[in-house]
Length: 478
Ligand SMILES: *[C@@H]1O[C@H](CO)[C@@H](O)[C@H](O)[C@H]1NC(C)=O
Ligand SMILES: *[C@@H]1O[C@H](CO)[C@@H](O)[C@H](O)[C@H]1NC(C)=O
Ligand SMILES: [Fe+2]
Image 1 (cartoon, rainbow, N blue to C red):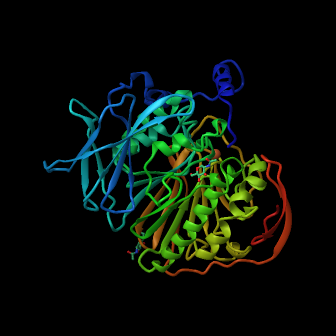
Image 2 (tube, rainbow, N blue to C red):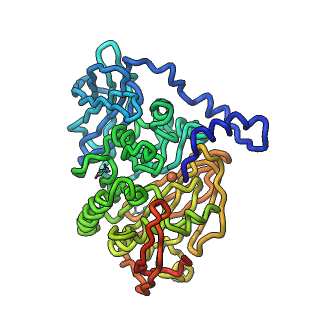
Image 3 (cartoon, protein in one colour):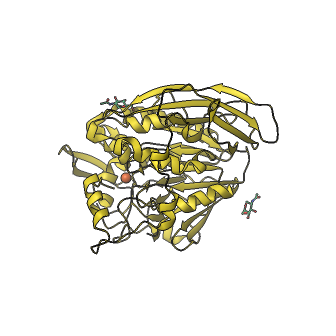
């Protein structure tokens, strides 16, 4: 969603008791938020873990406010043999002047399916002990999917912390826009986000992609806080923005839609780097379908949506990532050609599930469209709770299957290689409000309609207009 200036937010929060603008952060949320003034400078804090390219490793990333050497110690639970890893430390100086020390360490030689306990810090100044389970090689898996979660109005936070306590999840997939924003308030908004969610992020690998709120475009900072805050699997580009990793029968792809959205500031090269890498990665994944049948992607900006702010759903923003622009190739034709099964998105602050994206009206004609789906299945999960309050819906696009604007998040359950269950949980109703089974026992070749149209599109930011061939794969009205 478009950036709401901090000042406006402040005005709204002052006004909320006196005017009709009324959304009040719940007491549970206010009680859950960590007070950043209580964070001690020499203590390790904001611990979060992430998978690497190897299924025997787990990386940990954390912060101190002072320049102090850090290490990580870990052991298999119920054993006493402890291993120590020296952390690599980066002094991060944000362009607006504030400083954080970012520490990183990788735990190696882990056994898939086993649980490990670890602490970070230095003698006398250690974090608490966290326990995580190294992802097993085989299902079942429980995966948390959410996006667009802030601290102000972050209504899913109490429920997410309960899920952490129950050890509900093996993996977290985050579709971008965090904290609103990680770099706001001299970095303290990010501190509060990470410190509050540490019980979850330090115990379940937290896999992220950048949203538009991570771009730091006001300072022309090229995602610098985002890039410095994480340690995603390394594909040789070192900016945490696109990568793949495997979880049992699933090949996951984290991608940047924001490379497209901000090309006018940061250049087209990142788009080309990602696309070239993605083509190779998908070709390799397709050779491996017999052992790993699913390809699941996640990124921030949707190809399609049917929210009230149709400016975003029907116009340039989505077309850019989906169909491409200027020399930049769009992602959807590649997804169809390479048979990407699922894409998770955020950006819209609501939940929307779509029928498989097939040449219409196929999805209407089959009894169970989610069985051996004939096109990618898209889901928007951006309703975790953020600054801007409730999202509203406009007219649904023809292949929209379900829409919910309650605050909440999504859970993906993978019992085996042929079945995926997906559900949307409403924190307001404390109930599952939408669900589906996706099943696949054979790979369907995705079909493309080839009617080509020539349209004129203009980039809203640089006023660049351009005639472009658009392959009208579907009966979408532009
Ligand atoms: C921004 O960062 C990307 C790497 O993520 C780099 O390729 C690009 O050149 C940078 N752009 C600018 C303007 O610094
Ligand atoms: C996979 O899981 C589903 C749902 O639990 C079940 O119905 C199906 O029989 C399982 N398939 C195999 C091969 O175990
Ligand atoms: Fe967004």
